[in-house]
Length: 228
Image (cartoon, rainbow, N blue to C red; front, top):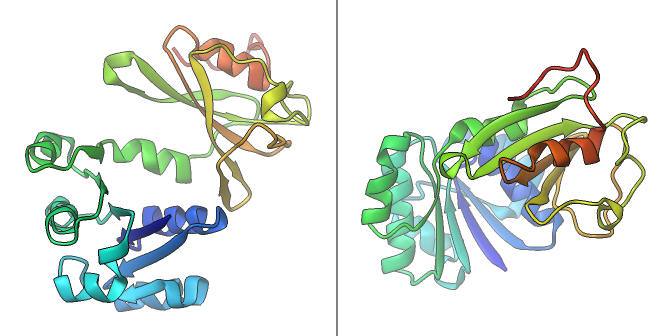
């Protein structure tokens, strides 16, 4: 799959790196020259310098053959323009936008951007947040509480440590979405082994989040912090 990521900040950086590690073709578009130097040092020719809102820049990036365009700049208006241009001018089949101000999400949808990430707090939590060892932390509730995202740090004593994903019992309302291992973000498969020191990101229904937590790090001790 060929993915163009517009916006080389922290979100765009980690997203590009994760996609490349999975074997996808990626172009990362960034216009800040100071940031570009660091990105080129990491990604080389996968970086295109320029304003992702300009047709010429997108042509240079190969938007015409892209399977997916992801706009993750810090400006909602830019993300809207990128997605609309990808859809209407280049015919990109899928567009995904970061919405910095959740109040703007309806505008994105009215303008034809159906796939949005409205809570930047969730994204930054996945990248930045430190979770105390052995505890799980409720990061966010989506869809009015119908979907819950939790993060758990594994220790050597965690029941999930040393097991593959397929060997961990999870009910149907739970799924493991990502693993943060050192400085890398991994997308788990059934054969992925969980290791002590991993931060595991899971998604669950509101009634199943404790089951998910217990499967990863065990039952709460009396001194553990409650996440409800």
